[in-house]
Image 1: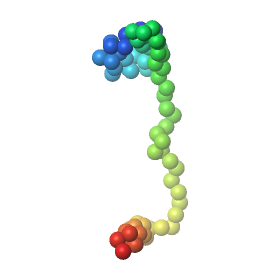
Image 2 (image 1 turned 45 degrees about the horizontal axis):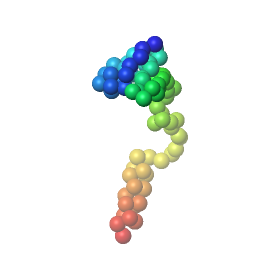
Image 3 (image 1 turned 90 degrees about the vertical axis):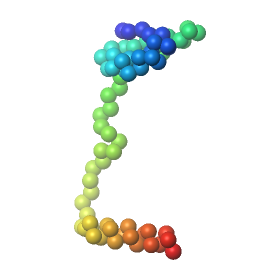
Length: 74
């Protein structure tokens, strides 16, 4: 476990985050408050979504986008 003052943690934030990947990090503030920094590994990206099957072609999609834009500009 590593312990840093608030000022140290702020100055070395990148290093503190790297250390938190492998062990607990405590950050102490002047007023006596303490905070624990814990690494949480995310399982996957929120943008990692499954695809869908469709019979739409690229041309169909482009035409749909053009039609929707034309309606906006009317």
